Amino acid sequence: MLRQQLFSRVTLIGRRKLDLEGPLYTNVCQEVVDFEKLDESAAVFQGHDVGFCCLGTTRAKSGAAGLVRVDRDYVVHSANLAKAGGCHHFILESGACAEKTSLILIRKVKVNEAESYEGLLLCDRQESRPIEWLARKVIGAISHVFPTAFSVPTVTVARAMLNNVVMPGKDGQKVEILDNATIHALGKIE
Image (tube, rainbow, N blue to C red):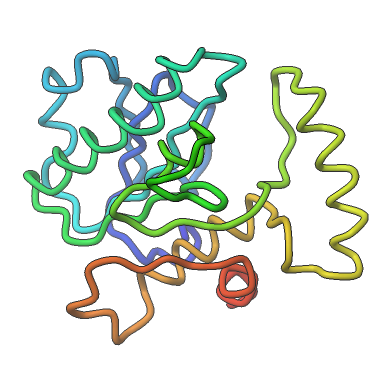
């Protein structure tokens, strides 16, 4: 995305600054916000055509209330601020099997009016998540036989999110939910 210069300006809105150096990042601005006080940072959401949202936590890390606050409330608030600021295309990396009537909290919380993926994200984490590590190993092995069935690498998700935005013919489509196979296909487009 940055090499292709698809966007004249990229603003990273997050909890902390990332270590980004070099000529590739000349049009990248980083804004650190307190998601508990998003209204105080409304100005950083102004003037963007496209928004990409990858907010999320786990119940183990944040508890049930924290999961709802991060995965639903922060996402919805961010989307509303982006829309008020002129954003016309908001892409959300969401969760597997999201459904409003689910008895499983994470599936219920992940239902949002934006795009989502279905499956386990394959990525390395800084914090320890033993069950997720085991699931990644098992699903990673199964993925050699059924590559798009259960998992998707984070790089593939990012590329698919970007490609979905720049593809023509999306006018008037309010909500689009992408399954793993579609994400894998979109993620292969260079």
